[in-house]
Structure formats: structure tokens, C-alpha cells
Length: 445
Picture 1 (spheres, rainbow, N blue to C red):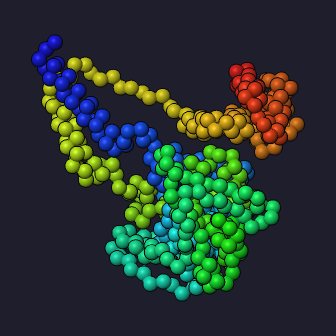
Picture 2: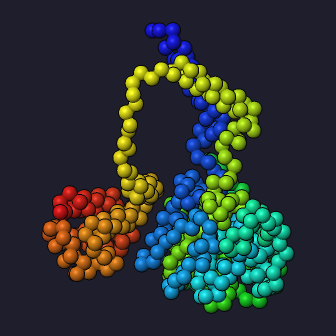
Picture 3: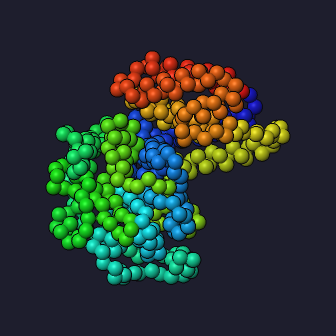
């Protein structure tokens, strides 16, 4: 082995060792997941929102689902004749003056606004819950003004929370229930978050009773602990309604892979009138500009690394090793060959991710629902056949275009209907459904 090659090997080994120590320092031994509440729609971490986003995407089957990851004002001002539903699920909604005014206009037209948050902003407290139309004092530092009247640099107005609205209990477990006799259960719906393998002492929020006495119009919907502590209310506004839920953690991945918790979530959203959903992923952070998703503005990993002396030296070691590697590897041995990456089927990857969640939790019924949903998407995409109604006309069209026997097509949906109607779905039931669908995929034209 040449001397230069030995030096290269040593440098690479040092870089790898430094990287291993860096990863161990950041993540910790055995800590596979990040147990902080991030509420990001693309996060598969325990307290991310990937599962609830997937569920909401199909909650109103004939309606559209839009992820508003850019300026939310553009989506609130879009003209449409159809009913719309605005949804925010996160730690806290950071609304500027213009966003708040547009949100009020949005509800006033007859649309629904659903907000799940741990704290109530002052603008919502004064302008919605207490119906005080007097504008709040603002403290903008204005450099440039965009089309909605917001400063492009300093947007700190109305970002304070009203401390008089929310109180909380600090427990490792909390029961939630509904006031409606049709939704209320004897034992309620139990939520017990974890931090790794340890119980998490969580703040379970509810509306402070003295504050509710100041509100002129509201309807309590859901409770925590007992019937006297409301955490979910409906507030009429113009022709529409505001729905406020004070414990967004129950909508995260950790809870939404449990069938009983999905049942709770379904009842929560059943109060909303069916319509096109606008999911607000933009208002989760105040540190943002008008052209990027606010999640990208949060503290990055490099800032965290450089703030810790041990991690900082590990980072410098890696950089030094890479520089040495470049110095001794400046002579190119062979012209690089461009690698053409194949197109990735992100939709299939996502469905498989959700499917694994349901399979690990033995939720065969939901897994069967995902497989049928994927099959209907395949039929609609390949044959341009509407899938809203599974009837004789649908079977005839699929038979003609796929050149499959109509009896084979009917067997798939007949077996799926059986799964939907049974209480206990066995492994054999799921395997049979998979076999029928797989036969269709392999033999359709």
C-alpha cells in the first residue's frame, strides 16, 4: 500500500470515529426517537402530525385537502363557493393582524375554524371569545409592507398569550369525554403520554371557569377530568363557528395509531361541517419570512452543535479530516459517471409507512381500509373511472377496461365489506383481501 493511501485511510477512519461520537452525543444511547412536541406534518416522531394529516386528508372523502405551508393569507382569501374548514394543530398559533382579520372574515362567511393549541392568543381572546371588536395595540417595526399590510421584518403584534384563559392539571394520564350523550362514554377516553419509556407529566389544559363566565356565547363540547372542566368549545362567529381544543398533543402520532384514540378524534371533528380542508402548517412559528415554511426557521442542528464545546471540537475534527482528504485526493482517477436516480413513488412509500403503523398495532381493519384506498386510487388513475360510488355501473366499467372477470372484482369489495362489518379482523381475513387485490394487480390490462 502506498504512503498516500495509508494517510487517506487514517483520515477517513478519524472522520468516521468523530461522526460516531457526534451522533451518540446528540441522540444518546438507546434514544431512537425525539420525544419533543414538534407537530410537523412530515414528522414520524411520536409527537409529530404525519398520521393526523393522513387521516384528515381522507376525512371528508369528496372534499379537497390543502396543506398551507406558505403564507396562510393567500389560502384564506381564495374565492370559492364551497364550504371550507380551517384547521390548526400545534403548540401555539402565531397570527399577524392581517391573518387574524382574514380568519374572522373566513368564519363570518359561514366557514368553520378549528384550532387545537396549548395557549390562547390575545387577539382570539379579545376578538373571538369575548367578542370585543376594538383593535388591540400593536408594536410592529415596519421596514417593508407586503400586499396584506404586514411588515416583512418585524411581526411581533398580537403574539402574546392571554394568561387568564387557560388553566391546567399536571398528570401523567388524563381522561377526556364529551358532554353529548351520544358521544359520551362511561370510562371516557384515556391518554397517557411517554417520554421514552417513562411516563410524561403533561400539562392538561382546560378553560378557566371564571373566564368562561365573561363569554357571552359558547357551547361546551368536550371535557377533561370531570364535566366541570371544558377543553373543547364551540364559539359562533357570524355565519360560521370557531372550535377551540386546548390539548393538541392528543392528535399526534403517538396517540393516533390507537383505534380508541382515532375514535375520539373522529368525534372531535364530527362537529365540523363537511368541506374543503385548509390545514395551516404556516402559523406554527413567528420567526419566518413570507416566502418560506416557518418550520425551516427554527433553530438548526449546526447552531446546537456549535453551542456545545465537545460537539464543536468533534465538528472541527470532521471538517479537518475532510480537508485533508481533499488535499490528498485532488487527482481524479476516473471521470465520474452521472447517476440517474429513478423516480420515487412517494405516495406508495407513505401508504406503506401508515400501513406498518397499523400492522404493528394489530389494527387490521384500518390496514384493510388503506389497501382499498390504494386500489381505488389505482383504478381512478389508470382507467379514469370515478370511485365515489361502488355500484353496478362501477363494476361494469372496471370489467370492460381491465378485462377482468366481474366476479373477481366483486369478490374484493365483498370481502372488504365483510371486514368493515366484523368486530374481530383476523390475519386470515387480511391475507385473503391481499390475495384478491394482488390477483387484480397481476392480471388487469
